[in-house]
Length: 218
Image 1 (cartoon, helix red, strand yellow):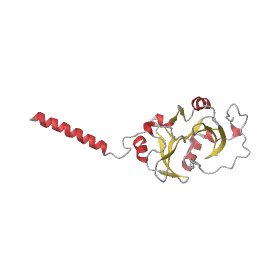
Image 2 (cartoon, one colour):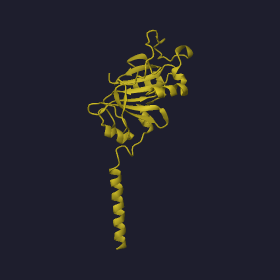
Image 3 (cartoon, one colour):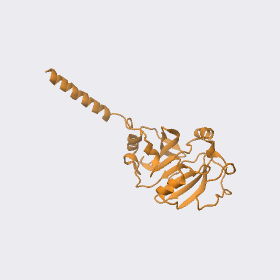
Image 4 (cartoon, one colour):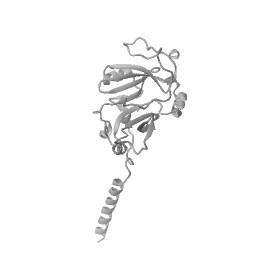
């Protein structure tokens, strides 16, 4: 009799544990991993040689100023855009518009908000420049972010972005103190350039404007 009661108790405990897991809110068990901040072997902080090895040569490039940082954006086949900080030559931004690209756990274009949160964790959406994002901070570097832009009509994933650019003015001010090398002007430090390029022409550069991280689908 005691054996039967013991077996029944173990069974009830197991059922209770399973029900607890099943009824946990979406994302409660999810967490960020190192691979969530890597795209095709390229991570923030890598140089152009690593990028070209992974993506090939860029098909188009332009130099823009984002949140006070000069960024050389290079477009690659497959709807990938890699941004390099001009004054360091290192990757600071990776934008993924490729609709076939799959991140961890099958997260890709069209993924639902529920699936995203079950993968990366529960998160309240943010409005940045009129666009809706789920923004996840890298546990190892809070200035690095995984930004997932959502379609406001059906709340599905449009664009993935891995970035070390500040997402708001508060972060920009702090980053200017913590990583001043990102904000140095051309005359203060040698400018990085792709070997085929001799110099970056900044004569037509617009004046610095507020944070510009939105509009990724334009």
